[in-house]
Length: 296
Image (cartoon, rainbow, N blue to C red; front, top):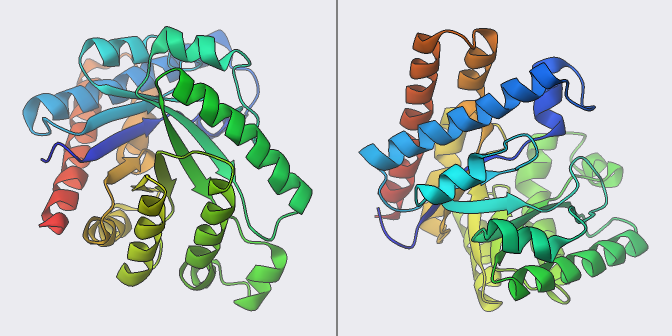
């Protein structure tokens, strides 16, 4: 592995995880909170195993202290690079959480603060302006705390854009979203300092290279997200991203979802836990190796 690569194992899901495991996105019961915490520690265990066995550089974790208490501390103690989410989860319009962002970042001292933002250049102009204003403040506070600003940009289609591709979301992903992503990046960069872009796949190789070049023009880098896709699809995206000049990936559910399901179904079985941890380590390592192989 090269020192420049960044392979983030993302496990910062909150409302999504509660709904997927327990059928609701409200406040977790004590038993549910115990299970989600155990699951996030399991994901870290898988990452630590991979780092110890075969991924000595580039290993990182994106995790929330809310449902994963103790995971950030364990990760840092073991020398794993740490990213923390700073958005209020599940909202259409970005809000920073916690309110005392500077104190939060000084307490945990992550390498990255991560925001997840839904932003389409065709959205309401006032809504886009509000998001940019809030994000500019979050970026400023993050950098003042010595934390790099990691921007996860999602570009959901408008009804009109879907109509352009006859309602075919896959066509939207390949034909329209890459350029919309670059338009969104240009708008955001007018006000917001971004160190690292976490992006949906950008279509073919040439399109992906244009996205990387745009980020570099403003001092940033790109990593590819997994979007919960199957392993074959993720491998295809990784190959294009690596050749296009991406710095790595931030992948979550595609690596750990089956293992977490197994743990929650039988949390008292040590054999299940051991197998689940090994599966996380194996898939994470395979994705990291696939990325490095495509680079060379």
